[in-house]
Image (cartoon, rainbow, N blue to C red; front, side, top):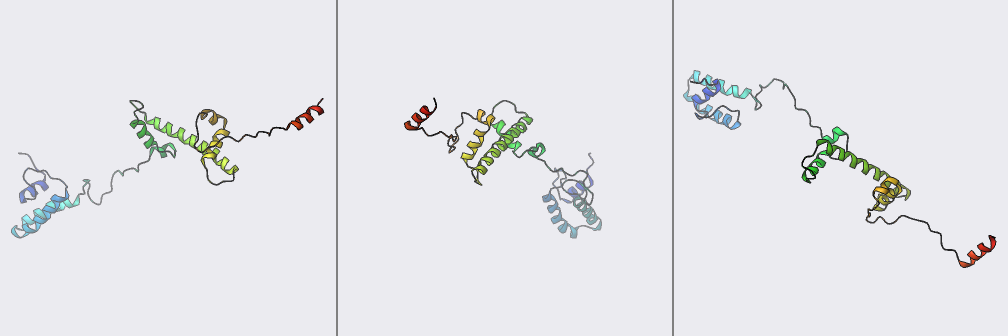
Length: 195
């Protein structure tokens, strides 16, 4: 016959566990054994009472994780660090990776692809916001509006070339100064004075 653990054999002997089940640290079984402990105390002798007390106390000394109370945990769980903070980015790398996978742009997506895409998007956003902020300051405004974004993008040579075909909603047009047409009298006076 197979040798049983002392606590399991004690519980099986006094009816805390049905005959086919193994010992677990489940709280329901512990509660069931405590209920039966009170009813068994009157019918058992001193030896039986000590056996039941030993079995129940061995269950109480262990937590659900299996380690004994009072002992220090050998390995603490490390605090999770997001991929965005590891890369030093403000844009969410995990969300970008999820959208890359969900969009089915390719069969496989590298883990570094989301980091690179987040870094590029963050750089372009910072660049556009800096130019738009400068345009807002020039207009003596404290809030950036689409007009400021348009003026900022068009003031930068590279961004203007890349976003040439883009239409900015409520962006307006670039201000250009055209001299008013000269009157015919002024033109004649200039022509006579020139030769």
